[in-house]
Image (cartoon, rainbow, N blue to C red; front, side, top):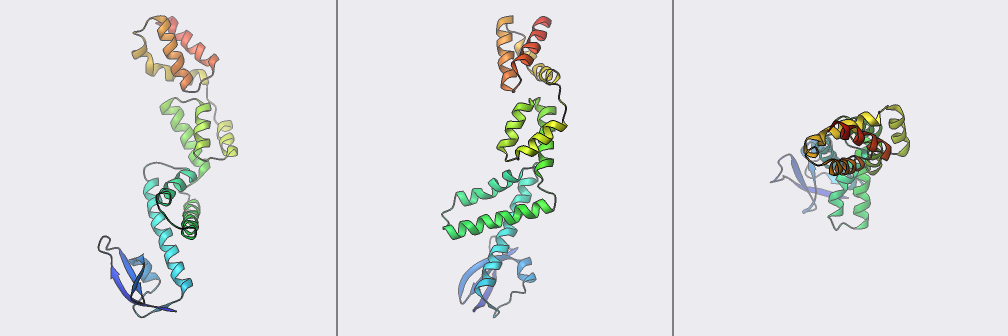
Length: 219
């Protein structure tokens, strides 16, 4: 057993305190954790309790970071996990510490999932709608983007199958964004530039040709 010999508020963060065991700094916890765990000077702690306090504090800090990350826009579970892992990638932690850190991240993502703050199906639906409505991106590109964000193929297929998108209409809307800047070119250059642009958005050749032909006739 070891003994808490001192508890001091942290200078840079008054919401946290430093715990000293047997005269040496041991770890830091939030004031809330100190109160919940009834930590007081002269209390005795075993190693299991020490590790539990450290682990729970790490989960708490990572959770706060994840909430801040989620405040900007919805995220996939992989995006949250990768963001939290950045600190680990930049550190020189040993294998035991790395495993502990990864376990903390798993605890955070599980908590976020139970609270409905991270849901890959809802995220995939949101991402699809955003990319189609505002970026006029083709389903093919969106599917690739979702896969890179760690969304399971089954979820991607479910979202794609449940959403009806007219590729001609979508490509036409995308082309409108480039009309002003491309109409100044001669017909051949116009077709080349518009064709490359629509192809970069992931539209099939047949769709690209039809839309380019339509606008070429109007110009």
